[in-house]
Structures are given as C-alpha cells and as structure tokens.
Length: 217
Image (tube, rainbow, N blue to C red; front, top):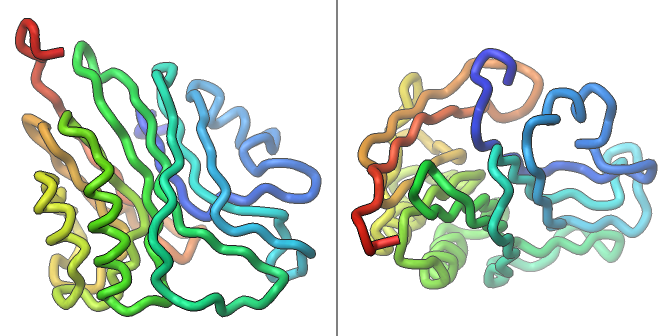
C-alpha cells in the first residue's frame, strides 16, 4: 500500500469483530486514512468462534474521491448453505460511482460462490452483468473460477463489454480466482504481487480512461 499508493482498493472477506470493524484498527486506519470507505456484509455469524472470530465479514471499497453513490447488489443463490444455522451467507456485489479525471466511472467489487458448480457462478455473473450501467466500468474481486477455462464467468462479463486485464506473473489458463475486468479503458495492465499474509496473492492494475467527449458525460 505504501509503495503503490493506490487510488482504488477492493477487498473481500473483510471482518467486523465483536469489538469493531477491521478497518478501524489503529494500524489499518492509518494505512487507509486517505481513502473513503464503503462496505457491505456478506457473511453474518450469530455466535463468533475461534475459527470465525467476527460478527460479519464482507466487501470493502476504498477510493480517493468521495463516492457519488454506493449500491449492494444481491446475487442469485448458487449452492445450498453448508455452514449451519450459526451462519448466514449471501453473495453480493458492492458498487460505487466515482470520477476518473473528468469521466464518470462505476467500480464494482464482487465475490462469487466458491462452493458452487461453474454453472452456478456463471448464473451469478450473468445476473450481475445484466445490472451494470452502459458506461465505463472497473470490476474486480474474487470470482472463484476454480476450474479455469471450464468456467463461464469471463464469458458472461465479456458479453457485457468487459475485458479481462492480463496479469503479469499470473498463469492465464490456471484456476485464477482473483481477476479484474474493465470497460471503456484506453489502456490497462496488471500483475500478481507475490506477498504473504493471506491465502490469496494481491493483484494490482493500472487503468487509464480517455477524457469524455463534449456532451457525452
């Protein structure tokens, strides 16, 4: 974070502990101090345990400019509940409207079902894509495409005009579960960062949008 100084941050499985949100922990609050934060819960726990020490976890977007709006979109159910009565999991996508220079832009953070078949994730991706606006977009997150080329998620997004950003140091045909898609960008490039601290490697991307033409917004 310090080296890259991002304008936009998309995180998944961000916890809210019994004593408060993760992003208000002193060291985290200092690190994210320059960002406006928007969150939405996805996994609620009735009784926290040592393995699930939070009250809820979900999606978080951090952005340098004040969001014009935010919206949580409920995704179709893709598998049966597996964690028991103590847990309520509802897959969502979290979106904001912001500005990239003089361009109005929508940014979406997604987290698709990991315990579903590829057809279930494709159904979630198709419903999500149908709800998107027609303008420039950034969509990123954990899409849980565990079966690589057998998954239909990328195809559903591409049908909505989104392009997947190639990731340097990533394996294109491997079961890459964290991805970034864009629409309306003049150029975009990304890479996988080999950093420890999670069961996922973070990914970073640079995306440029051309200035809007007069009268096009």
